[in-house]
Length: 279
Image (cartoon, rainbow, N blue to C red; front, side, top):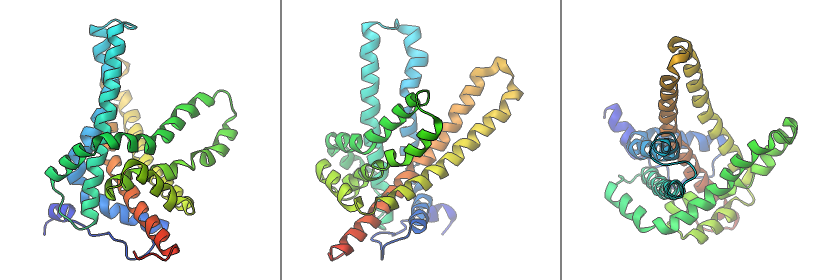
């Protein structure tokens, strides 16, 4: 078996034989990510491009065609946001389904993934909004508080305030992997992580740190290239930076979802063992 076939082959991580430590969760997630990265790359690459649609809209379309503040501009802006939310929920679901199939030792099928995603798309909007609504809200509020609160206070409050996000993000694997409805997925995510949320926080922080390393490396590369192009080529520098961020995002999204899938199964197994239920 060559390297490409090895990376595409199902890994069969699930069901878990026993509860895992945090380091083992990350190791299993990396094995799943390595096995599925080539298969998930079309989905994740398109997902990152979808997230760039508002930026492209503001940069190219609005100034050239529409007047800022016009009624048409407002309508197009709302349509752009709606398209981004719709496509993001669908693509996150497709990536999660593909990684879950690989983790269970099943050969993923494109047609099955697309049909499942389309069928569950309306309910997935609610599940995705609940999974990522709170973390996105924190990303918006914390920069706004930088000028009003001391930096030490923000750092001290960051982890406690972000702690509930560890339970909310589990709604995504519960919804797609276990085929639950949005409200049942929310209830299961809270139930399995209520007593073990610190494990989920540790796994998420470690995954974020790993992804941020690649973002920092991208920033360093852009910074090293800036003197070579000079100040007159800012557009080229911005283009190179965007391409690097797209590449990192295309690889980072499947890795984060792989961590969520493995961590969700680990917490679910611990919950079953605590209640004396069969695995």
